[in-house]
Image (cartoon, rainbow, N blue to C red; front, side):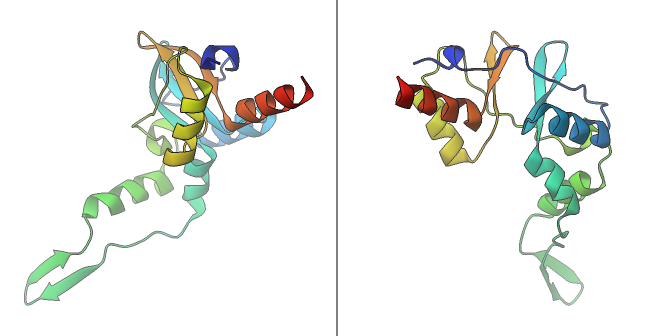
Length: 151
């Protein structure tokens, strides 16, 4: 079975300048776990529940070793900067995941399920020719399981 058969075609999206409060409200009102961030019809990021929960998580300061006047970081400071950006962010552009994992409408459902499980992503935008066509989430796959059980 193809993703195009189970995906949600009427996708709720936000622009990069959407406020975090507005995004959270949309997610609760619509009962969804993530929103693609789009410019035109092109996906440039995604905001998920995980991205919003991260705003309330503890900030992990970079660990380092001080040797005389030199400071040797044990982790790249870039990780700290990214975490800080998300915690202090006020717009979709600030808190979104920029490296969006996408699938095409012709992707097999089993392949997207594997992707969701292995990469721990949900939902996954469905893109064709750089245009957002739909979105598939864990609940779409679970709904399919229910349909197969009752058939």
